[in-house]
Length: 434
Ligand code: UDX
Image (cartoon, rainbow, N blue to C red; front, side):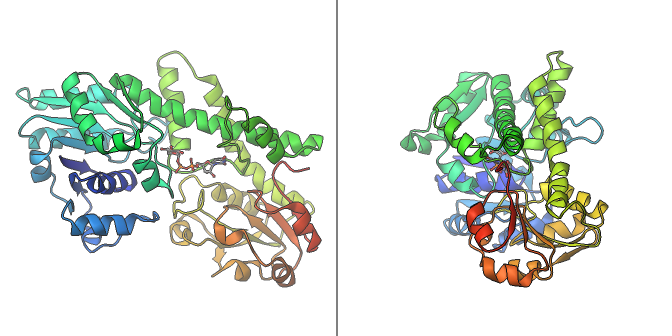
């Protein structure tokens, strides 16, 4: 099949490369000429493990190409994916759909024969209807289908998630569009991934419901962690104890500094807004959003408490800045709130992150950067593990202690066993560990 992918950001690039790897002919389009030039030279605009080799191989096989020119790619395509950004709108938190609708208008001008236009970006319920209206208004003559096909990719594991999904959700309003979409994912029948055919609005809502549920699960265990600290229990054991119940499931029960990233914060807010607009508020999700926001700042207070109640004039070293490991993404990262809280309390911050420092620089003021974990710890009054990069899992604790001004370790990801760290003479605090 010939596929056009409009938008070569995170979702578009990963999806385009994987669809090419399935054997389709894919052209990834982007308005940014620098991005397309870089991709044509084999340079990736994002950090995602395995993406560069996947792109190179499919470009070599002539199944994958990049262009700023939407017209010829769309004219030939049987499926046109819209994978442009949907940032949170300033003020009301609602998803900003102007890029999606602008793409729809351009696609309308470029289509020649029957094609299915597919929203891949996470879009509020009813966006597919509006895309269809735009297409039909611009080109009443057009033979076109409109489908919703939400992505469930995790950054850092996106290629595996695309190729071996738990499920594929396809929302279409007619059999012809559904058939084209099934053809797009035919290679996955071999992996026996369930394909759920639903109505368009159902598919759109499924994405939000999935992300809101996962955000709720994380927030739930985070609150249980706080309670564990007060009652003298261990949240990791509680998580295992409940997670072995299949109805609950073991995943997404790691207590930490609160969820961040490009999806959960934005999508939970957008769901809250949609539900309010329809007069059926999702109160659990509203609470999750509020609790998670407060939690990020509370983590700064936790560090201050570990430092004996004050960080004024103290040097606090942060290991990890990105919202999770294996990405350079700083969007809504807990580190941003933690650093702001610590700076407000008078701390001097030094930080190290294996991939995120370049993205972090413009977002943070007054932060010094170190070139590795040990340089970061030098002279520090406290060391805080914010992101669980593998590089921080087996640090030489004796060496760290010798470098630091005070042996205080705050482990916001429960990477270390308390007994082991304390044996090295550290004053240790984890999350939800009494
Ligand atoms: C998420 C969804 O998993 C994915 O299906 C969707 O398409 C996009 O949003 P992503 O944002 O890449 O993916 O990261 P994910 O691994 O889900 O982590 C999100 C946040 O939750 C991170 O800040 C992470 O640290 C946090 N988290 C996750 C926890 O604090 N505890 C957990 O148990 C799991």
